[in-house]
Length: 272
Image (cartoon, rainbow, N blue to C red; front, top):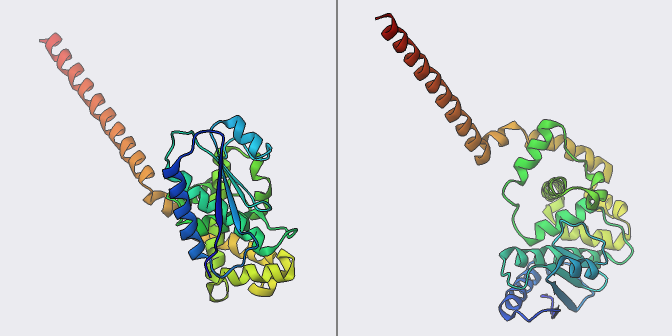
């Protein structure tokens, strides 16, 4: 089954036919990827806003200032904040992310609470591959003792942009680990279980065979082993920084040696 969603575009500015075509293709590709989960929605609304004020009104001020996209699963509406002249590929990818939120909440059913880490983890997983640097970001936070725990992500909207990026990386990595240990790696079967039981904790344990709390403990142990200093050493930014520091140290040593030679030469000339 492929979802036969009807797309409705809303904008206060001029229409962007090519942009809308790209979004339509993204939605079609997305619908082909998720045939195993039912959705009660037949219409997806894409509202494109061009100012931060307009975006705030469209999202009722419920999203942080670093956000550029939001989804309302109840109405099947996606709100994007991009300037009218933008044709950014990020906007197209963002549609897939927000569609993930809509799909998940409608598949589980209205009124069923979904933890933020699972919500964001699924939306990232379903919209594309893991972003470059997310693993390094987690490893760095682990190294300096600033890791976030999954249950803390409920307050992510009040965090700074940098810490929010860490939260998204954490949720994506935790969701990937969940996929690895899920029976048959079938995340859609888990979602169907959540919908049947009408309770996240009960549905999670029924399908996974472990409680949500046990998963948190297993993930905390896995994160320590999976995200460590070796990832940071292999990161190109660390390598570039190390080379730069070595270059500066080498240059400083050379400069000191040169100045010493000049002083020694000047001393010899004075004595002569």
